Length: 64
Image (cartoon, rainbow, N blue to C red; front, side, top):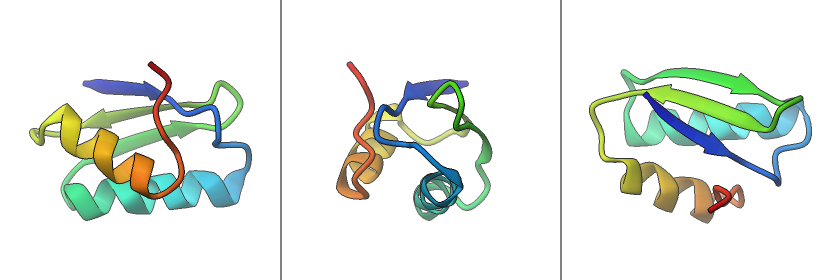
């Protein structure tokens, strides 16, 4: 399980964009997005770095 805190995710639209971005990296990924806590959990065999790069490019850089 990969977990990220995304400070720039503030609404349902953001959550949809995060979900789509994750699916671009791994179409088979299981994604849980919680806008209230600004967290996303990803179940995937892909490398964590691939998600960091994709989310950053989409405008949702994970908190360090």
